[in-house]
Length: 134
Image (tube, rainbow, N blue to C red):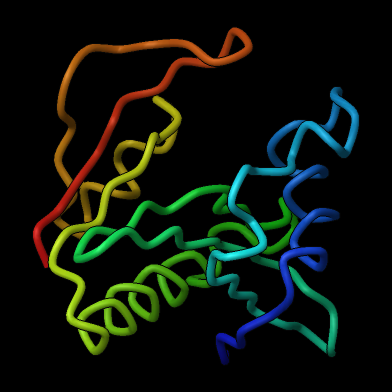
């Protein structure tokens, strides 16, 4: 499994299908997409997992991390997280944070991420802020 860098526009179909299928595709756009780093895992040249990093000085924010349902539970998300952490360390980034869906906390905790703050909601979906020093 290889992680490759992609254009932000190529993230939208997976973001939409996995994260917000009942919203318009435009709902999956993020302010700053043009300046962010975007990554994908490919299966037979098809994008099956995406993640985007928004970097500000020595801090990075992970957003819109999504793996197609048929490819979940196969180590693809783990491959992506490990790639992102290694990539950030090589750039001298020392802190990574994101808003994690409550349903995914266990996944992120396996990589040493910790919750901070209180439970909050975005469009009726429960989230926690998670972070890790790299």
